[in-house]
Image (cartoon, rainbow, N blue to C red):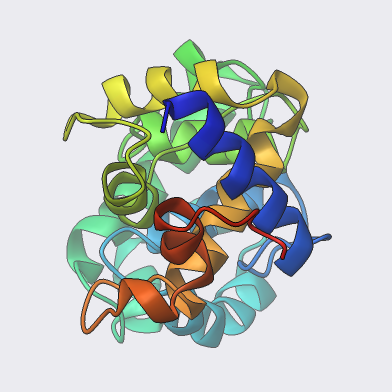
Amino acid sequence: MRKSEKASRIFALLNNYYPSVDIPLKHRCPYTLLVAVLLSQQSTDKKVNEITPELFEKADSPEKMVDLGIEEIQKIIRPIGLAPQKAKNLYALSKMLLEHFQGKVPPRLEELMQLPGVGRKTALCVLAQAFHQDAFPIDTHILRLANRWGLSKSKNPLRVEEDLKKLFLKSSWSKVHLQIIFAGREFCKASPHDPQKCPFCSSLISTKKPLD
């Protein structure tokens, strides 16, 4: 089966199971989304959503985050992984936004990636979900499923991003990104996994159409 046919089957299933998708991280604006995505690195959305209400009550803008200070930020986000480094990054990126971007989150990839703690995946998530730009962030779920579904042979996130962008319509990238994450969490888990019981994997080894 060619990659294009696999992608077509996967796309149909994604839209069948997840016709509409909500951003899993709670946020109020581009800045709070940026903060939430940064906090989600090596953590879970659920855990992040448990601590951000308190954080955003005290600091939902770069000015307030800087005023809060590194120590207080760390106290609030302590339950998640890498809290000391994330606290430093939140303080530093907030300060940089104030000094170089008039306190606003820039809607451009290159500028976002200049911010402390912000890599390509985090920047693309913000562009896709806060600014509604066509972007395809690659997280661990997408990296795993792109390989499992035969949509990419690479383990390199940038190469996988390039492969997937060729297979799906540009206007669908931001939605498909979230749909694949949801599929990975609900049906196509890392382990244990039975391909025959997974609607996505079974569609790729069956002669039937994916929605039959």
